[in-house]
Image (cartoon, rainbow, N blue to C red):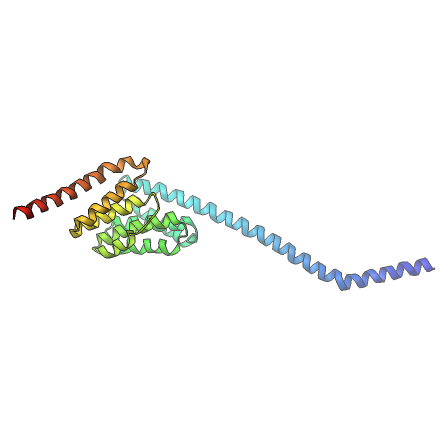
Length: 228
């Protein structure tokens, strides 16, 4: 009889423990399970989005190659895919690449305001320093084409890391030449030459030509002044 009572007492104690601790523990386990499944669902979703973005980006590049090869009808497909990348994957690199392509298409259409808007969007949303430097360079070129020389210079002047240093300095020199500031142009072209990496040897002849032309023009002006 005592053993029976002990069993009942143990059973009642177990029930009381479950009511006191078991239900809350079950809730904790349920929350943990939900979090685990939610995390894996989010991971799978991220992977799916990345795969979709990669596929769309690959298709866009194929159409872009066709467009650059002379297939003007591919432009509309490129534009649609780039806009989809920007709309659906704007928080990823794919969306920013889409905006760069939209800027390229806008330049081809002589829509420099549209191109500037796309490039500014990249600058506002990109977190990759190299991508931001590329977008900055392209925006500076657009500003120069639009006649906004001071805005263009503000974008390219100052210290910048390789491999963009030479490109920035060359554009700065081009703008100074157009402004008639040969001294500043000479300094910029020389800085561009000094910034060239060993792998950029193909760019050296053009920079040297620009430098010699500006130096020659400066010498001619000096000689004319002496003759006068």
